[in-house]
Image (cartoon, rainbow, N blue to C red; front, side, top):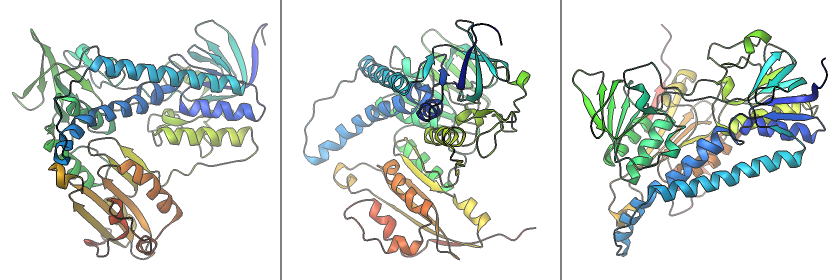
Length: 464
């Protein structure tokens, strides 16, 4: 070992949600810990992901609230919206959160390096900013994922990703978004809510691939009611600048859309390029992420990876749980495997989605007989506001065990509901348990415990 090489028990690459949790918990067990971050402490979720996005979601809902208030007797002057004020206030909150994350690391005794870190050998990393070398007994890779713009097309230089969307200087009046998953759908609803004319382009036959089909159809219909133009079965083939805007060419012959801003949300591949993984023998899985076992250990025994860089379930709370389990296992003497089943999640669309467990298609493939309980109704709030909207609630039950194996909600508060429903599903609650729970009235969630007759009974299809 050369002179001046620092030694630590754990070196973490990436100070996002998973890396920060792992570093803090490991330090709490007495480990000497150093963490490196090349951008801003807090990672994608805090800096340019879930947190600022939710703030924009809140902003986008106010126009509907102003409209709905009239049905409740309020006379309002026309509200004025200022995008730069929203972005400045958002930036101030994100800066506060970043400082809080850095303070948390400092108080835990974790050394923070504001630099990119790369492997020199299996136990040595180099800080690019300073050239300093650190020798670590254990290394955790928590570099997350980064947005992809997809294949190069003419005019790709005019396209932004979810990284840049949080920092637009002006509010775009016409927005085209390409993609069909969480980010694309959420930003389509954000911009539409704030007053943009939004076009959503997706190559598949419907948005939100992987979600329950009833949820997909219902949300698309709700988005279209709100004026979002959803074009499926298409891709963007070229972006042509004109005198005052862009002309976006789609794959259907002759189909073009005018736009002032174009955003692509085509997935977030694991952020593994340029780390030097090849030279230290860290294997990459078929999913494009770092291959890990149940304890987040890579093919090199002392190198671990958590969060989106492993491309398992790419959600912030999953990364945090994996980071905690890693620290407990390696430094706390408490081997813990993270259970990736029945992870609840929300899509902050308008209306929002909450879901946990299996989709109808997955349940039908797994169980001999599935009872589908489904209801769709106008929310009570809309009876006076007059808004044309509906809530969807759906339960999937394995008939043999009576267990609730899936719950899907589209409507106001769906994210809050699914967090609590997720506890019940994780515990193995039965439909009888739901039925034995007295309703809270009047709420939308009460329908979850008052659904008596299944809408469908599905038999597993016989194998060919």
